Length: 490
Ligand SMILES: *Cc1c(COP(=O)(O)O)cnc(C)c1O
Image (tube, rainbow, N blue to C red; front, side):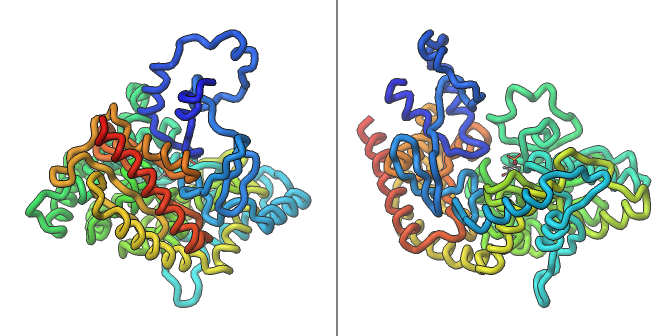
């Protein structure tokens, strides 16, 4: 493989890299594979048929070791997944121990202590702790599945409540909820959706994102901006008929699509009030921003609202197991209890004994070592380092985030917030520069509206050190300077 092609292969080793860039890269690749490489072709279906990702031969703590010999500092844990870093022995031991006890049973007839304990553990409220009002957990294998299950749960809730006319979902532009047909239908991550538009669910509509940097008008106060967004949501509910809406779906802090965008103050409280007015369910997707990532266990704790349904994923298993969950409030469970007394949904691998044991081990470490608090503290350091290092940079438009979940949004012009042309691939190039310097970060394009904009996400493990954070920001700066210099010369 030519070195230039190899360099293109650098991926953020996660669920969701920049599809638009990849499509562009694919389009310029040779149409046929030379015979010798075809015979050597590997059978695994990669994201690209022309680019092959790096092979990771081992991973430990904050570092990935590649087969090329390179050592990569993991500044993003894939897609904000690896919350306790890599290679944790305690998690491995718990996984093996569960495999030795019971590796699989079907949930139609059986349960296991690992699944029961995980549900109890993650929903346990410590004395004086945050009262989240969530009663039960349903475990599955991915965030997309969790959101699918959540959409069905919300629909079943109204079906049993005697409101079967409710069949519409309202979501937001610049959001991501998954790659299955249903979860993609409520997502608006455009590059990932384009080929499928015509086969997606039609009972979904979208309102504006709560994204102050790009969409709050000049001269508009935060309060006025929130009022405008809530009025828009109300108008959308009215257009559909509020009695026909099942749920409103939102990420408390938007992840991959726009890069760590928290809503303006008061937005979620306003959303909650509006949903309550019409009996519409509030489904918060915390698959990326939850499990401590923003410095609180749930991201919504910082919004003063209680959701009806929450989906979690990435950080739940910390990358050690493919596991995600739907968390449901007592209101939902009570309605099912009074009705069919069942959740009309199920999967072969739901509440899998081994993945649950693995996730439980991860979550026990997080609690025992106070890693959520550590995440909040280290997050303060990371934010200060990022602000100090990047505030004055001419292409850095916004630096935002919470906890250890931070993004830099790049713009061509800081005054007008004009974005780079899409052919410039600023974020992607930046990520590649960083990777060549030995740092993995998570890039994104289409930040502003699915087409325009560039950002990069920094999401180190909660176990990260002061030294690692310093190193990360220094490498980020170097990667940035390389890209700025390249543009100044071109
Ligand atoms: C990653 C993600 C999903 C999808 O999870 P998968 O495990 O990739 O299916 C859904 N919602 C959000 C907010 C995510 O970040």
